[in-house]
Length: 480
Image (cartoon, rainbow, N blue to C red):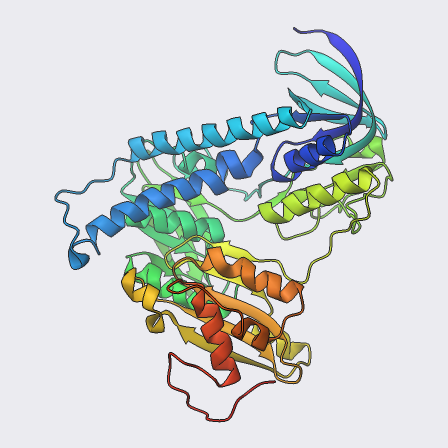
């Protein structure tokens, strides 16, 4: 009911995405009073408009692609296989609803009160909540956690309109398959959803300003995906700057320039995915005294997620990079445990990342270039999926794992993989890095057979010069 009310709480959490809802649950587990405010749906960008819905559609397209391409080769015959985008969207929505209901139940089980509305600080210990019906509440709190996530970066002249120019959220709700799509931005979202579209019959062109798609990723991973995308019919333009965009009734025309050459690209629609910025505007940070970077909008935080205001914390995309849900999970736990007086801090040796394309790409730790740049005597070994029994059995022999180790100490420095299930076993490499494991530790860890995870053990053995399932070129062991 509309009106003006007032309430008090121990901790106010602003934002119900991965960082916010995990922080709230952990606080509830620790016996703290928590009020969580979310202006849209619980679960945030990741659950509702990003990670989960995109992976659902990608899974559907992979099933379609497998039946259409590899099925006949392995004895699975299906005539007239079709992809019904509207039905896939309906299924994707059902997945999101189930996940969102799960979050709601977990919050209730932890004793967290969740309200829908938009919260804005009015001071370092107070905020105003505007409810969907126009009602206002004053909220007084002892501590607060900012977990408002990120919003798409703006690009003048390319403002999304839901028709010719789409955001990821709008693309994930398409009911009709376009004939062609320009993808402006070759980052994770551009590559994942661009490949999804191509797999279901859309003509896709990816335009990326940097010299490679997936800028910042291990270069060989980027090359591997570029080759796979090209094979799938995706046209890739790297080192290409977007110019003027013209929107017409049934198409868009985009002027691009690569070096001295310029041309015009034409497609039915354009998917804009040029990065995100922290969603920290209109939060009343000035009234609360919380500082933020005037250029990026990010909120500076310490290793306990504290802002410059002692009782206000920040987690997830509003703070330090990278913008990853699993990083936000951990930050939410650290903020909650700090508020509860637990000894804790945000500290990690390596942050894993996964790109859900085909091949799946996964990376954790240092690349060879990064390791040598730090003055380490680094060396790498690359083991092919084609030497894995499980890969042959699963018709997934394309791919490899690259292991980086330090010759001087034998320590594991990084792991980078392209292939089936790479994202599922990359956490094992992350644990090894966190524990300071040597390459020999990994090599001597018994891996179940036949699994894709064996590629990590095999790469470690190859690095040591002791491989079993590829021929050894150098007979001398190569590491401690």
